[in-house]
Length: 296
Image (cartoon, rainbow, N blue to C red; front, side, top):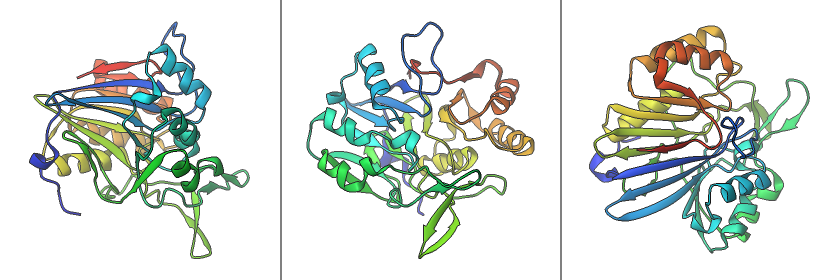
């Protein structure tokens, strides 16, 4: 993969992020939590504003409830990015597209996102995209699919990572299966994609769904793609909830070597990893909650 040119990516004048769905909620918040994440991004560059929804959680009723509370109309959404196939990030995307009520709403995702994805550790359970959100159902609901392995520039200053290179030896997707050429095999979650925003005078903000590709791999790819070495923020799930203590420690050590201003991690991050992140980053770390708002 060739490194994108930072002048091609461009810069945002400012970025607003609202956490519409997350496993937990802010103290005394009227919002509803759910297992999953959804982020509403408003990027402004040169007087042009794009509104991008990153993931949809798994419960449309809770998502729409929170959008009403936060005065965000589905019709305001210009683009949807699906970070990976899992149901807690994609379930109800067809419902959302119907609520948007437009034709050919861009839906950006990896081309393998519709593959079978399941676990068998206790019993066989499909955890990928559900039948009600199939490719055909999305398109019928108004989605225009952009399925690509490559980084995708959504607007000047915002792009996806595309398929993330695995550079570390300690970050790996585990416990997930797929079917390929008639054979059951481990699923390396190559569809795991994150969103990168490059903000003028600030640096990069990385919005990730679950970081199945490894958050260190994702951060390194963001730096390589943009040429910017300052990370203003990492927001999302880091999927360390079932990781060994050694992997958690190594992940935090590698993140601490990067120029990161703030980390806001929740969903699949896990309590142990949140503790280690707090010990390393102190006030520059915070657990993620539904209802949080960031203005950069």
